[in-house]
Image (cartoon, rainbow, N blue to C red; front, top):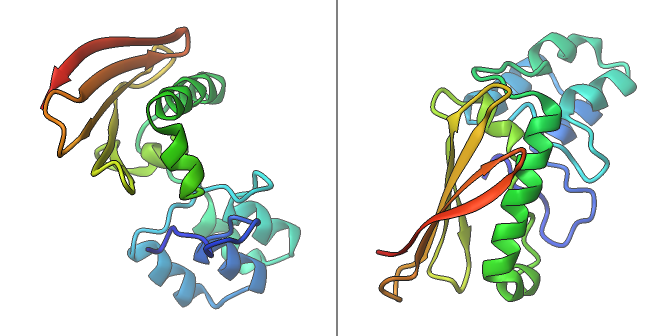
Length: 173
């Protein structure tokens, strides 16, 4: 829950953004990070916590909030893959995404993780999207598996690169 935003809020600020804005003590920020806060998570204005701290003059937080990547994918490549991933999510589950006003997952936080893999549950789908980087770097590939637990054979596996996405397996689970 450390990366969630206020329900119904438009700023999409998570606790780490709020800590940066308010100039929280360093030990508070470190505790948020220990609990899994993502340094690369952006708010609705495209700002990470480090950007907010810099704008607000919170110099004591800048080094701690600076993103630390375990994997590299060029930003242009990352954004193209994210666009393809969002299109797949919306193609499969647009009504539920809109009904629950879900924020589609950003891919940059994957690059902070030791194992770049996450899960995006969709309420009402009884399933969701598991996604991970199979390949990083300029030729990065994101794999996504989605399914509904109560509908046998509903699984789909897609592979996305900066050039596009392709369905590679359908009907599993």
